[in-house]
Image (cartoon, rainbow, N blue to C red):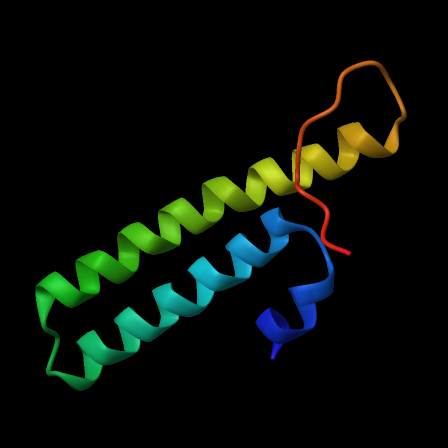
Length: 78
């Protein structure tokens, strides 16, 4: 639901929520498969990448709201 709601916001937020969905999906599949380690590892790594992109998105939001000379791209959708 959050992913669908973010379709009209920035690309960075869309990527964060997409990675979060994929991370939860792989972790759930790994647990339902009886603790299948490769699937759980993929879900864990996707979670780490999601956190890094989330930190970038939060930093870009703070820096861009200050209207300074330094700005980080987040790719605004219409």
